[in-house]
Image (tube, rainbow, N blue to C red; front, side, top):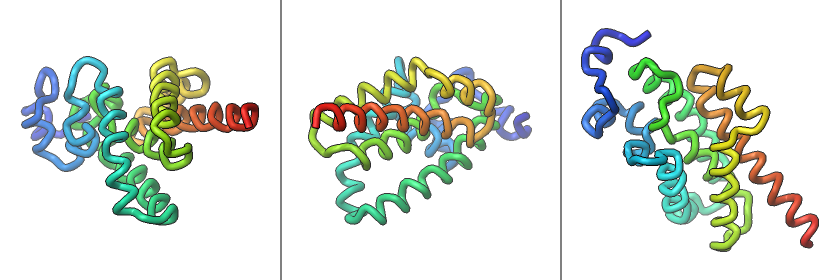
Length: 171
């Protein structure tokens, strides 16, 4: 249920103005990338990819990168839960912070070549769109900020699993 102040201003479709009215919405909507149509999840994942290189320069060690990813995940639980309540929809398609954090996790753990990253992008989007078990289960059952974030982390895990299998087989 939404509070009176957010439901009174609830747009038919979230706009840039609506998004920037609250920090939680700006985060959940991936700094605005979730407002781009069609395929907001793909746009959010693309923004994550673009931001990864500057983030790795700023967060120079794997330990700092891991701390950033944990903090971004926790922040996403809060932001997506709050934005979902504001919208009256627990997992609105425009909320893409979940894709961003999950794809940053993939980028953190795969080889840094453009080819590997492009393959990771395609695999991650495939798993996120198709939602093979148990991704679809969590997507349907967990209707809060954790649920929004969690199903994408499983898609990231599947992506990393395919990479690990490929590296193991291909040597």
